[in-house]
Length: 620
Image 1 (cartoon, rainbow, N blue to C red):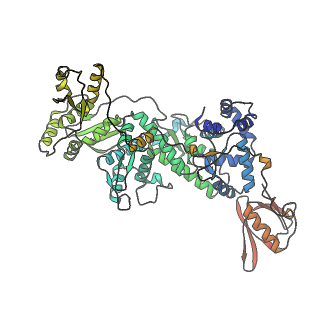
Image 2: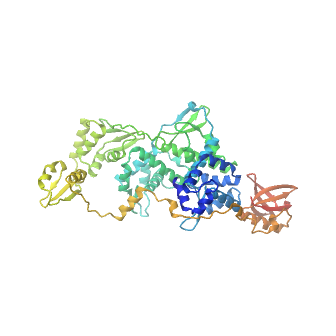
Image 3: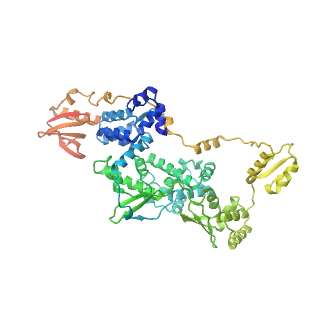
C-alpha cells in the first residue's frame, strides 16, 4: 500500500473508510487504496470537478508545501483567488469525501489539510499527459553547458573539509564569513541559480547555506555552539554507500528540502519525474501544464514562470537536468543520466598518478575511498573527472589523521591498480623523514579465557601486529579486530564487547536510519462533512442583502460592502442600467466622495458608490 495514502487511510475509522469506499465499490482499506490510485478512475473524477473544486485541488500541488495546507493559509489563498471562505470549505469537503484530501490537527491543535504524495503524483501525471504533446524536434537541440555532478560533488567536498578542519563558530553561534566565502570559492557553483530562493540575499553565500541545510537534514552536520563539523557516525554510514545510492539519496533529500521551503515547487519535481528519460521537453509545454493554475495573466503568471526558471537553474546546477536550445531559440530540458534517473552501476575506474603528484580521479570514485583520498591530497576541482594534488600540507594532514607512510603508498597502489611511480614514492618518503609527528593508536584488548592455550595464539601475533601479555590479555590494533574476532569465533569462542552505548550514539543511529514522519505527530479528523451542509457565508448576514438586487442609501451601501469584503463574498451591482459581478477589495473616501475598489475579470476597477444603483451579495 502507498506510504502517505496508507497512513491516512489507516488513521480513518472503519465507518469513514466505508463512506469513502462506497463511491468506488470498495469495502477494505487495501481495495480503496488501489481504487484511489487507478488512473482511469482518477481522470474521470477529475473531469467531473467544477471550476472551484479544481482550483482548490490544484492548490495542494502548486501552492502547498509538500501537499500540506494549514487552514489559515488556505483561507488566505482563497481570498487571493477571489473565493469566499465558505466556497473554499465546500470544495475541501468535497475533495475529502473523494479520499483525495485528509484533515489533521497538529500538536498545537491547528487544522492542516493534507493531500497524500501518491495523489499529488497522480494529479501531476494526469496534467502531464493531458497537456504534453509529442514533440518532433528531438534532433534539433544543442546542449547548453557540460553535464554536471554538481550537488553530489559539492556536498561531499563541503563535508570532507568540515571533517578535516571543523569551523569555529562566532560568539553568537554563527559562521565566520571568511570560512563561508572560502568554501564558496572552492565549490565554484553559480550563485545565480539560487536567486528567488530562501538562500539568496543572506550574509552567507547561497550554495554554502543550502548545502549546510541539506547536510543538517541528512543528519550529517554536528554543531555544539562552538564548532561546526560532521557527525562522524552518520558520515561514515553515508560514505559506506556506493556512489549511485549516495546520489539517489541526495536527490530525495534535496527534493524534500526545496519542496518544504518553497511553496509549490514540489509540482515542478512531480512534473519533471514524468518526463521520459533522455527525451527533450520544451519549456513552453511545461509552462502550458502550469497554466491550469495561473489562468490569469499578470503578476501571478510572472511569479510562476520565474519559479520554473529557478527550478530549472537549480536542477541543472545540481546535475539532474540538462538544458538545450533549438535553432529557433526555444529552450528545452531533459533528464540527465544521474541517479535516480539512471540506476545502472557505473564501471569501476582507477585513478591516475601523475609524476608531478597530481591525481586524476573518476567522478564516481567510491565514497569511502574518496574520504581517505581527501586526507591524503588536496582537491583542486572537477565534476565528472576530479583533480587532486599531493602536497607537503596534505601529507602532513594525512599523518595527523593517523595514516602512515606505508599506508599512504598502499592506498595509492590499490586505487591506481599499479605500483606508485618511483619519483612520487620517493617524495612521499622524503617528506615523512622530515616529520616530527609521533603516531599513537587505539588498541583493542581481549581478555582470553584460561581454556585457550597461549601456544595457539603465538604463531599469529606477527600477522595480527599483536602483543600477548603475561596475564593473558591480547592487545591488537583496531584495524585487525575483524580478523582476530573471526579467528576466535572459528576456535569456538564467543566474542562479547564490553561497551556502553551512549544516549547520543542511540540518537545518531535513529537519525541515520530515517527521518521522523511529520504526519505521525498529527491527529486525524475522522468526520467527513457533506459539502452541501457547509454553511454559506451569507447566512449570518441580513437576508435583505443577499436575497435580491435592491437600492440602498450610502451608509447602508458602505456597511454591506464592508461585510462582503470581510467575508470574501462577491457583489452583484447595477450601474447605469448594466449589471456586473465584482470582487470588492476596499471602500474608501476621497475628497468627500466614497469609492469602491473591486476586481472584475482579473483587473482592478474604481467605482463611485453614488453610481451603484442596486447591490446584492452573492457567495460563489
